Image (cartoon, rainbow, N blue to C red; front, side, top):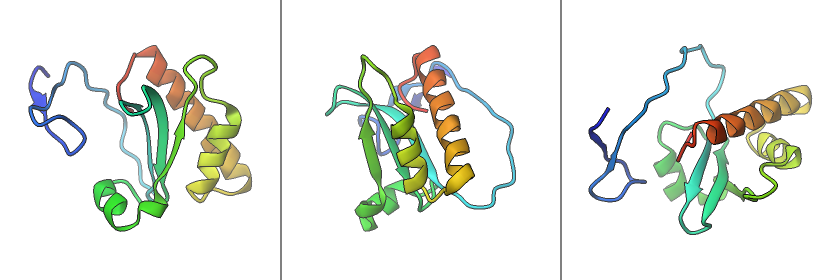
Amino acid sequence: INYPLNTKQTPPEGVVVQKVMVAEALDIARETYLAILLDRAYGGAVLMGSPMGGVDIEEVAEKHPDQIFTTAIDPVTGMKKEQALDMAKKLGFKDKLADEAADQILKLYKLFLKYDCTQI
């Protein structure tokens, strides 16, 4: 807290961290990447995901850009269920799991708005 965070996504001087959200760690069956973030080029929030995991997402973007999916979120209407479901399917979820993943994506979007996040 109150120290700069430097990543490939931040400006060279970093971004001062003001808040950190901590969640319980869980065992995972497979890893995907999902983020909701403010995109300067779009001028608003975007939903970004990849079925190829999340730890080295910069490497995935460099070597497999076709496996990074991005959807702009309308600032007036917000994220639609169809957008969340489409992303869930692109992440490799099927049938009931796709619906459950879409519901979780929508909940993350509500969290993003509630806490005025820049990235989640």
